[in-house]
Structure formats: structure tokens, C-alpha cells
Length: 181
Image (cartoon, rainbow, N blue to C red; front, side, top):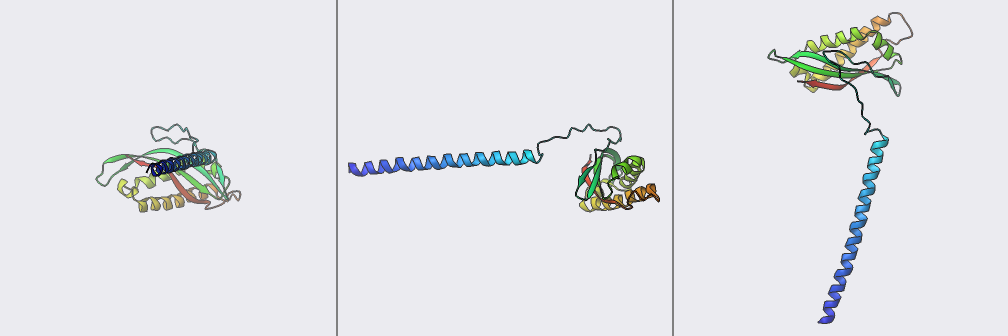
């Protein structure tokens, strides 16, 4: 009987060592995965912060420098504060920021020269809608399509016969902030 008890005790001790080694190996692997994931996020710029001061009273913050993405160029219009109404006629505030994606490398210059006209188009388009419509996916997509057409019209008129700029160069608009309160 005593021999059987010794065998059982020895098997438990060796089984515990194997379990402990497996747990330590698992912990080391998890730590390496977390470090690797953190490195990937850090190298892709996920931890960088954009400290942009907000504009007040409907003012528009200056555009950020254009960034080239493939064959497209972009310019940002940030922090527009607009008045809108809901279906019951009550006034609400809306904060809107968006990026304009264009095939023309001179888009930043065009937008800067025609900023007032572009902002007027945005205000007109937003004012013609109520907050409930703008909160739907379909309403946002319709707004994007109409803003692309209107901004292209403004820029085409500004370009005139100048062949240095492309006509209908605005291809898409991306909302970067869309808050209704």
C-alpha cells in the first residue's frame, strides 16, 4: 500500500510541474502577442493625436495640408457649426467636418480661394434638411452626392477656361465629424 501512495504522490508532483511550465509558456506567448500588437499599432500611427483647436460661432478652422493618397489628393474643412431644425421646427446645432477627395493636385489652392462659396453651398444644403433626415444613412449619402455636385459646380465656375485645373475633380466627400445636438 505504501508503494502505491508514493507512486500517486510522484505522479501528482510531475503533473503539476508540467502544468506550471505550460502556464508560464502561455503567459510568455501572450506577453509577446501584446507587445507585437502594440508595436504594430504604434508603427501605424494609432497612438498619435491630432490636437486641433475647435472653431467657435460657425467659423471654419483652416484646412490641413493636403495629403496624397494614390492618385487622389485631399483637403479638410473642419469644425463648421451650423443651425438646423428637427421635424417639429425646433432648432438644433450641428458640428460638421469633412474631407474633399480630388484627382487635382491643386485642390488645396482651389478650396482656399473659393472657401466662402464652398461654405455657402454646405450651409444651403444642410439648411434644406431636417435633423431626422440627416441622421439616416440614406440622408447622409444623399447629402454627400449633392455636396459633390455643388462643390464641383463652384470649382468649375472658378476655374473657367483655365486648363491648369481639372473640371469635376471632386470625387468624394468623407464626413470626419457629424454631430447633431
